[in-house]
Amino acid sequence: MRIEYSYTFDLPKDTVWRYIQDDRVLRSSLPGCQTFEEMPSGIYAAELGLNTGPVKGLFSAEVQQVDQIPPTYYRLLVKGKGKPGEIDAVADMILEEAEEAEGGTKITCVAEIEVTGVLASVGQRVMVGVAKVILGQFFKAAEKEMQNEI
Image 1 (cartoon, rainbow, N blue to C red):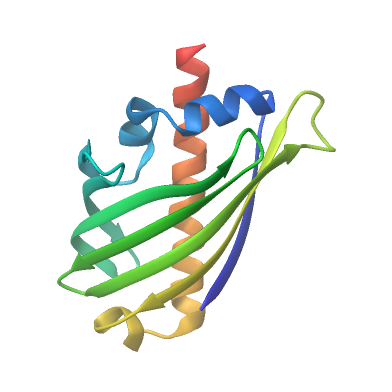
Image 2 (cartoon, one colour):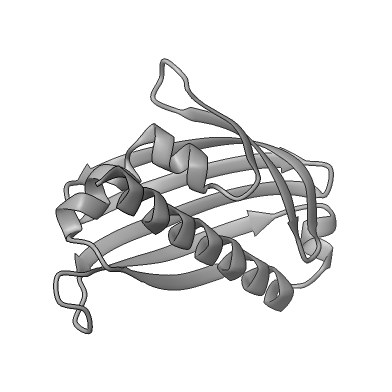
């Protein structure tokens, strides 16, 4: 399943890049985040309690940022397991100057996601909608955290 989602931060690109890499911002911004720890290999281990549409339950996830080109691009690798199924995602994260906001930054997430279990049975359209809600919650919370850090 393919998802594309964009969010515009009212912050400069360098600021968004710096804080989108920050452990504290990520921990505070991930919906339902209960734990978020960096492992020695550069992979983050997280537990997320999600309750959005058919996505309900505790998920254990591994998250890694690779192929970074500061401050414009990184690839996000996510593997998650929970009672409702498994998620395997690869997302290209593109940061660019926003056209509509002076000094703002548009981040676009283009992801390929595979789901199994109950998650796969609810249908692609429903899962795309849920994924966009979760992304929206994350980016909105991340922007609030970034504003607090400045």
